[in-house]
Amino acid sequence: METTINNISEWLKANPLLFTLIKGALIILGAIIVYLIIHKVVISLITKVVKKTKTEFDDILLNKKLLQRFSYIFPIIFIQQFTFFTSEVDATFDNVLQALIALFIILIINSILDSFVEIITKFEKFKDRPLKSYSQVIKIIISIIGAILIFGIVTGQSFWSLFAGLGAISAVLLLVFKDTIMAFVASIQIATYDLVKVGDWIEIPALSVDGDVMDMALHTIKVRNFDKTITTVPTNKLIEQSFKNWRGMQNTGARRIKRAIYIDVSSIKFLSDEILKRFSKFQLISEYLKEKKQEVENFNTQKVIDTSEIVNGRRLTNVGTFREYLKAYLHSRSDINENLTFLVRQLAPGPDGLPIEIYVFANTTAWVKYEEIQADIFDHIMAVANEFELKIFQNPTGNDFNKLSK
Image (cartoon, rainbow, N blue to C red):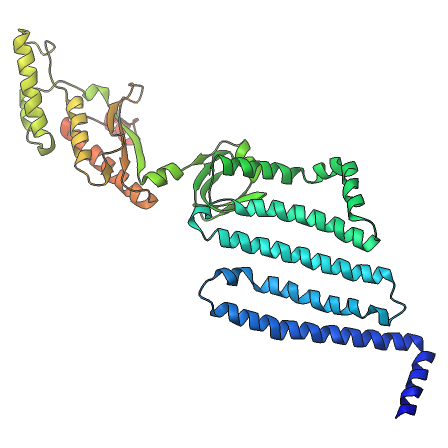
């Protein structure tokens, strides 16, 4: 047996290349065994323990990607420990192995950072903060430092000498990372002034953006428009462009209705006693008309007004009574918020007639429900205007011209 071993040893010495290949194969085989032990035994055990715990934070922190990257380090360390068996392996190969270890350590740090951000965003306080932007900046810095470290390990140069040499190429770095720097500054401004959060409804007319913010990263903000398309907005563009954030409306729990109808001025008139008597049957304004009629009569009597002429003294008008009716009608609706601005006002008359504007807030921010409330209100207004002997203005149509020709 001893003779056989000596013969094999002599034969291997006579064939150094083959001897090197066999030793290399054994080292690689050993590294594979180490990897399988770490991956199939250790990582599987950790995964089972993590899944049994009640908290989900350890599931996020010890995720599959992080453990996978850890499993690659140990086989490399194993190979590094046995490189002295092969005299042909020089310092460069050892440096490459060290550089690979450094690379996986950097990737592990990035994975831990991603997990940390995911854990932090689970808390309500930080849920809508642009933490991903900050983590990306930190990852870029770590990657730059890591690249310098890896280059120094491979070339055998001092890390600090390489780091000091960055000053000479700082202008180039600023040019390369110009967009990143601008995006980072924009992200800080957005976070500092609380301009946008994930979940906000924003509107950017210049970029045809109108929808909910889905994600905020360092370079981009992803918005799902209401037509279900997705728009990616550069972070710095959000600072440069004027935009509207509807968060205030959503937080208030009410949405403004601001719309006018246009009254044909020729249909505006004083109320006669006959018309006033008919209007008094409208339940929403019967008490108002009773009090107003008494107030007008008292005024005219005290001032000794000759009421035989319609222009003398005070009189009610159909448009003024109509406005009071609209106020009473809106107050009677449970879907209108009376704690916020509540106006039914006249605007300056123009070529389209006299605008009567409704300026109130619906008790909802849901788009569909809001539109239904607004439509119901104006359906009623346009239908009831004729009861006050008012005509809503609209430009002549083909039917109008047909009537004239008959």
